[in-house]
Length: 103
Image (spheres, rainbow, N blue to C red):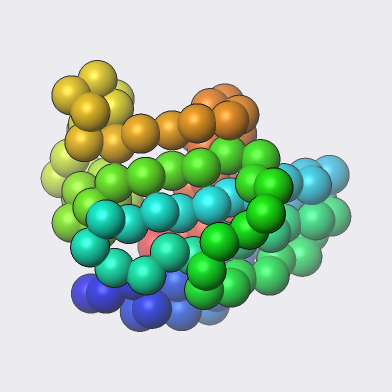
């Protein structure tokens, strides 16, 4: 799966109810694929390829590591501690992303 396919799947599996009351931008930076961001505001989402000028949280890794975290084959905390996953900005917000998207 490449980044475009991943974010298309996220777009299809958005949980609007879980995103009510959220106003945040999640930036995804992949070392080996295109960058994407997701702007969530009051139960709506906008997924775009590229970089947002002021993300709330930035998540950086290679695509395989990120996909492994999503499917559970890679422990997210271990990836973070080993430097394979970098998170800047609102780290607590990054932990909520799975509640907004069922992948």
